[in-house]
Image 1: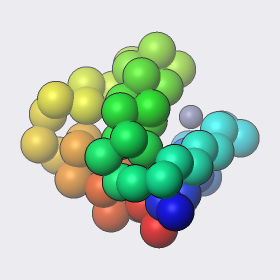
Image 2: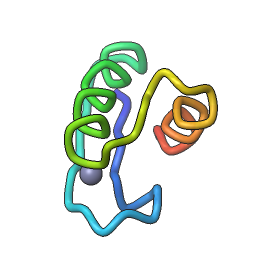
Image 3: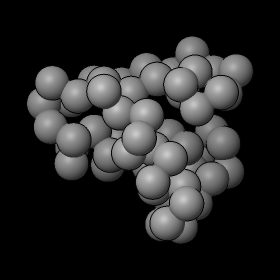
Image 4: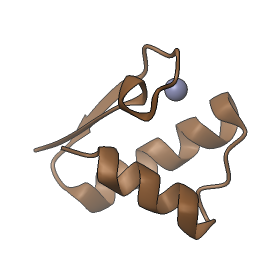
Amino acid sequence: MATFRCKDLGLACEYEESAEGEHELMKRIEGHVMTAHQMNPESPEVSEKLRKAIR
Ligand SMILES: [Zn+2]
């Protein structure tokens, strides 16, 4: 089980997501950060940040 919290990125956001695997989780997070935080998940810096925040 993989879990992600926006708070771990230092964002003032209550978003939290869990999925069976990291790949599935990344897909869900990408949608959220794009719409809620205007981040581009296709940029290497952003995707690395997201990956590191997954636990
Ligand atoms: Zn968020």
